[in-house]
Length: 307
Image (cartoon, rainbow, N blue to C red; front, side):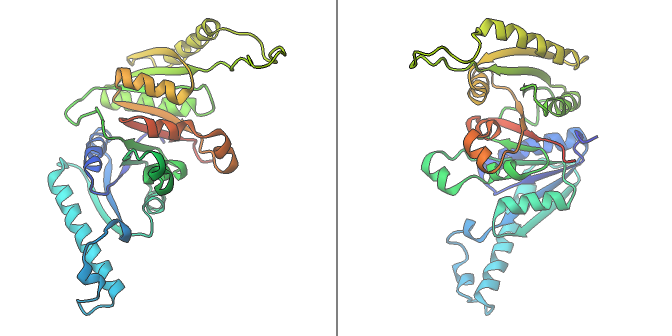
């Protein structure tokens, strides 16, 4: 089944947030008895100011070779410290420190080449101009990965010690809904978590600035909410045997999800990833990427299955 995680890749940059994300990776690796790949992309510009003597070629090697050797040595030491400090007992662990020009493509390529079922990584929540120019490794992986990606923000809740939790599933009733629910069911069965189904109702804005009549039918939130709640309850009925609740929110989906998380603080949010690209993504944006950027906790993005 494609909603089972047999090989999990945990990508680390050795930051404090990344160490926090490791708890999610180890929890899921235990729950699924999965092989855990600890992956670090050795990107030279991420090691600013380090090994200057190596960069100058003082070891007798060409400067580029000496720098590469020094960075690989440092990455190996940091990975060893991560392994020593992590709770990895009884897990099947594969260590990988891989030179790369950029982290995100290296993560995606490794995942494809090694049959990875889930990528787990931290998101550092850059905002404003700095984020605009630097981008986000996590966001780029989410955008291009053909497998689920679990991004963990600076305020996660699902601790390794806890055997239960609450999953928030953002349901849009689209083509990805069935696949998303499959992952939610599997996670709930494996971890003992409850499931909360949420759909956001966003009605069209009324053209108050114009004298002409609106071109769309007049509907009210209560009417739509009643219909949506019925559909969510039908979905919940398909998750028999699990603890399931439903809720209808108002507003733009990404903001409604973020607001719900701010109030209720779920352990994990599941959202479908339609993987828009090019002009369509520029014009319409991506609810998935907005959710990843706005939520300080953990988000599992589930892409459409490849045909």
